[in-house]
Length: 486
Image (cartoon, rainbow, N blue to C red; front, side, top):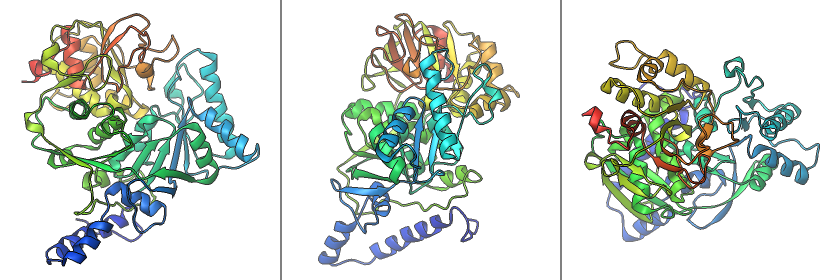
């Protein structure tokens, strides 16, 4: 490993790794019963350690209520105006946010629409950011051409990662339930309501109850037809949509260690669909490599102690898993993709914070390339951010003879990649691109399939990985991607 200077943003990780080695050395010496009891009592999980540090406590236990210092507060165009209204009502019209560099405001939900109220929400964000001199406001003014807006990013959770706002060991809160996405970086990240966010905006503090932790151990070589979306749908199907209610979900094991950052984000992104308070993956060299050049803020990772208390352990041999989907109308309505081969579909949607990242589109392109066929149903592509959109058009797909995703999608007959945003993931105004305005059956890489989620209340949504979504687009039926990848 390269040497790390004291001024480096990752200076703290060396100490963290050294601490792990010290723990291992200490464990080699047989402790007395009294020492063991004392060590077990003070041992903590990652989530407990992060919250302990943020509350300036030596140790914490699940169930404790503590005031924590917030490192980053994120809000967007749907919840931002409400949060701002509460902030001004409670702190005063002329009040200033606690730290203009720790408030990140990202318009992304209802952007490319003629809906006046949706447009007004973005105007409210802009006025507030100008008034408060907010450093990280990713504005959009020209809705006719997103590329004319250099500050505009797109989906908040992916933009937070790409812009270096996600850092190991920190506390990140956001007015969106999928803020848990950032737990992929080894930090505590969770969604909060507008009232809490208004308070954080004025004080930089939040009152949080320390969640107990469930540990998910995923081992085994990842088959070439599986993606992280299959893993999290497998887990949610196992424990149900309430199986992790107000609990931290910690993902470890050789499979998790082999995943790139975007796949780790997919895992953490959907812990909320299991009721989880937060999801977390231990930071490692993959994490540090991703963050290199993205942030100048120092960070220090933490790791669960060997004797940390977990309320339960779930173990999976990933090498034996198969592609899965979540049938309507719940993310835990799990079924094998091959069991749904007779389900005729009307469309496919690839996008969102869960399934609209660069790696998601590369996965879909891989299936289209392997088949050499054209899609049989309308296939909508909505990149999460401007960067993802640029990647689709500029980065050659491995093994494709220099072709980019955009070229492969065009040859397969997909719709042209749309402007980056949350798109139809949560329905939106009627003129939202790819919104389900009729009762259709859709295979989607998004995160929820409740009635009305993508528009029409009688629409049926099958949640799936980009592999399965692309395979289904090629046949017009829910399709196991092994039909094209094996």
